[in-house]
Structures are given as C-alpha cells and as structure tokens.
Image (cartoon, rainbow, N blue to C red; front, side):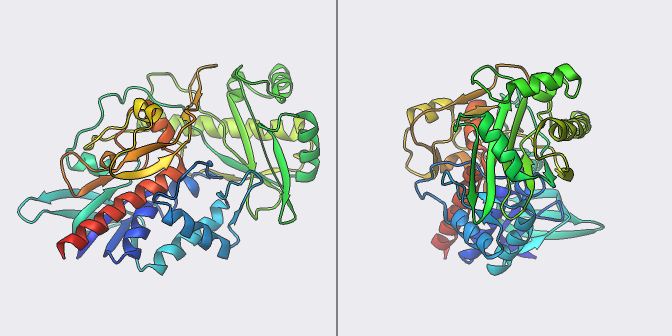
Length: 425
C-alpha cells in the first residue's frame, strides 16, 4: 500500500493533521494505537479546551470541529466566550464523522514496528502492526503525533538535551448525579472572586467553574474547606495540591475534574513505565478520596457518583524532539514574528510543579508565534512533529502544549505537506 502521508497518533494534533491533509486531497492514513480517536480530549477527559487567542492562523480544523460538534450537541460556548466546552464522549463520534467526511483512512489498534527511510526514493517504508497482522506501507511524508516521539525514535532522530525535568501529571475524572443548582448557589455565595468561580445558565442548563490550589498566590475561597477536610482526615495534604472543576456540554448533573495532581519526585519521569503505572494507581486512590470529600463538604454532591475515570494519565511534559528550529521562552516573551507561522497564541507559560508554591502561570501580555520550522525534523525534510513533542524548551512547551495550539500545529504541518505535494505536480 502507498500513501502520500501517514499520521501516527490520533490525538488532538494528529486528528487535525489527518483531517486537513485529507480535506485538501492528500491520500492520508491515520494510525492510532487505541480504539478511539481524541487522545487527551476523549480518553483523557481534558475538557474544556483552554481559551487562547488564535488570530485565525491555522484554525480551520478547530472551526470545522466546532461545526461538527454542534451537529451532535457536543459543545457549548461558555459565558466567558470560550467556544471549546466539549463533551468528551460525544467527541468520539464527532472525530469519526469528521475523518469519514474527508475520506481519511484510519487504522485503530495499530502501531509502527519499524520505519526505514529509502534515500533513493525519498520515501518511508513502514511496517505497521494491527493486532496479529503486519502491514507494509510506503509514504512520502510522516507526521509524528504520538506524544512521545515514537517515530523520531524509530528513525534515530535527535531529541532535546533538556528532558531532565517534567511537569506533574494528572488523572481526570467525572462525577455525575450532582445537584448543580444547589452547588452553584453555595459556591457563588462562598466565592465572590469571579476570576476563580463563575456560573451561568446556558441553553437552560447551569454551567460553572471553580478552583483551588495549595499555592499562596491567590486568596482561595475554598481554602478553609480543604484545610478542614485535611484536619478531619478526609483528605491527605497532597490531595489539595490542585483542584479545578468544570461542567460539561450536554452532560446534565455532571462535573469534570482537572485533578488529582499526581505528586512525583523531581527526578521521576512520568513516561517511565513503572512510574507511569504507579502514578495511575495513586491517581485512582486520590479520585476516591476526592469523591467522598465532595459528597461530604460540597452541597449538591451528596448523591454524586464516579461515572468516568480517565483511561490515560494526563502527562504534560514528555520527550521534545529536535527540529530545524527550537522554540524558546525568549521567543514567547519577545514575540518575534517568523516568516512561516504555524500558530499564534497568547496562552501563558503554564508549569505544574510537584511542590507547593512552585507552580508557574506566567502571562506575557502579548501574542507570540510558533515557527513552522519547529515542527520539521532537522534530519528528514518530510518528517514532522506535532503536539507536546514539538521542538521547544521546557518553559515554551508549557505555553504551547494546550489543545487549541495542538490543533493549529497539526493543521500547519498538514498544510505545508499539501503545499509541497502541489509544487511537485
């Protein structure tokens, strides 16, 4: 079999790449190791998308996603203007529908075994494993959207030398059976700071958001509640590291949790299989405690139940590859505008730490730009990296790893490939 493009990894950036490439007529294959597309946004329950400025640079996929989501009642626009409040379960159907609409071929339950670059033909020869079958496929281009740079590893490409520090991972979950009106009345009365707690009615349903962390950078209205729970033995101190909740589009009486944070030693790499496995168990233990805490201390949660636990650990920092250009914190602060722009954003540098008062949420108060060259391998001109593995230093990756930015990265890589293929015709 022969394809113009193989996209490895069907998460947020990979879906965008495959969809846009196929939409513009590129013969595209998307290879996903799981049985569902979406990665962090579906399997990982990472909703809503964080709001960021885009300046309409490579936002075609995101705009199409919102239109498709509306057909399946899988999205709302929140009161702050955030259009990315998605339903993670319905998005599984939405992503299938999107890729079918552009005739993109998808292989589920599949992963690459070997990949060789044939210099004389300037193509990649891939062996892909699907359960017990092996497929031999040639492609002119490859996009690595695997989140850990698996394709770059198979092709012996270089990685950044600074992969010695990692952000804390999380394991998200959803509680259902929540009396949102009761909880909304209580939390809005408790917390007068509308930067942290918000609530409104959208399409006749209550939607809200609130948060608490163990850091002293803000006056948290929920601080007395969490401290009392620790004194009572209902929570461990580390359970209070980070707590953030959101309601979900068209999932009545349900609340999505951006927590618990998994506390690791600074030297521990969450991508290590033993650390990863231990973190999953720690996360599920914390989820059980947080559920019982909510039932006891939050009005409206008395009859709640755990309806979803993320299938994957929410890893924020993995192996960053080496491309033709490396994005840095200085690029973000100085806001230099490159010739080839992959995306524009104003999302802050966001680093989740293992220790108290060491989180970073650094706003730059400007729009910054990611060069396309930060997505193109320095070894192969027809190999791209998108998503959290982009060529960037630790802090700039902390600003660029959000979902809307990943959508734009995937789109930028796909459109560059479309342009290259059209030049050769």
